[in-house]
Amino acid sequence: MSQDIAVGLGARAYEVKVGNGLLDRAGALIAPFTRRGRTAVVSDETVWALHGERLTAALRAGGLDALPIVVAPGEQTKSFEGLADLSDRLLALELDRGDVVTAFGGGVVGDLTGFAAAIYKRGVDFVQIPTTLLAQVDSSVGGKTAIDTPRGKNLIGAFHQPRLVLADLAVLATLPPREMRAGYAEVIKYGLLGDLGFFEWLEAEGAAVLAREPAALSRAVARSVEMKAEIVAEDEREQGRRALLNLGHTFAHALEAETGYGDALLHGEAVGLGMALAFRFSAAQSLCPGQDAERAVRALAAAGLPTALSDIPGHPFSAAALVSHMAQDKKAEGGRLTFILVRGLGEAFTAKDVAPEPVRDFLVAEGAKP
Ligand code: NAD
Ligand code: GLY
Image (tube, rainbow, N blue to C red):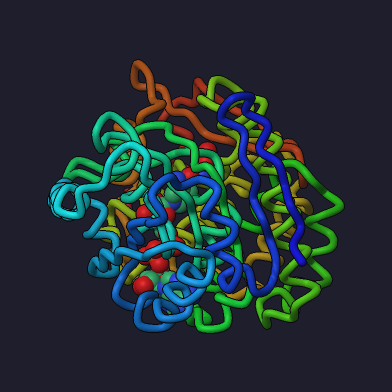
């Protein structure tokens, strides 16, 4: 049994299946998208060691040969070197345009594989089997694919929609608790940006989601995917509403850049802290009631996410350095910064013309050095 959520993109429409045990049905589900009875499966060492055998067996049961390509885990794999290595291994398998590439892992594997699929022989189809909570609720849906460069994250990439997404909740059983919490930041993001009822449900049931109680986890993932699918269908290329999915990200990207995109601060943790800062900044600018900001921060803290600069290694940060990262953001224009801010819980909006000075003052008030 699965909940099937459609991403309505016309000729590029696809389905996201959310349920338990989808891995075991992967062969039958992916086979219709392949022509030659095989699929290259890109995974990282950790995921492959835990679940590779099961996926291989399931693909075989569906009549598909799995051609594994196992890469090193971690953000550093989402690089030009990682892309060159993956492309070369796809070429060595003599994959052609009738073949499908399967991304089996978290956001790192999904983003890298999706981008490789977008440019391999000018584009091949790919399927996402996301194995982290973050990847199930966010990165596997919507077709953003990318690699990082030393100048910043996700700067080189393409929009390339998958043909199918299989979000098997059972796979999350092996995910470390810290990664669950990081993914949960993206779940709560949907409530905070546009669904007060979902946020209120998470206030009550967040602990059950984090404890992976099946009914709560299933509702959290399905509602998140539903919201993302709806937003992507309306605004695939981020000309408008899709930008709201970046709630917390202007602060988050600056903090990730300062902490080196590593273990000190996971992407989802940065988003959690970024959302706390976005709510407090909105309240400080009198855009949002202070009590809404407090409630948002309380829910994030209850999930064990960082909500203050002092919660993360590297504190005290330099406000000037953080603002300088924000100024290099893809969306900054003419020295003005872009933020997703809030008018209240579930009411995010894009603020395109934010002056850097109040942001710097706010960060100093939050404990950063000038
Ligand atoms: P990740 O892919 O690095 O996975 C986190 C860790 O969990 C890795 O060590 C991985 O090996 C391990 N892991 C994965 N599945 C597991 C499982 N089932 N059991 C045990 N361990 C498992 O990180 P992530 O948080 O999934 O993704 C982060 C990336 O996603 C970032 O690069 C970010 O930029 C990107 N992202 C992309 C989008 C998008 O729209 N494309 C959206 C959000 C984030
Ligand atoms: N994760 C933001 C987006 O997909 O647009």
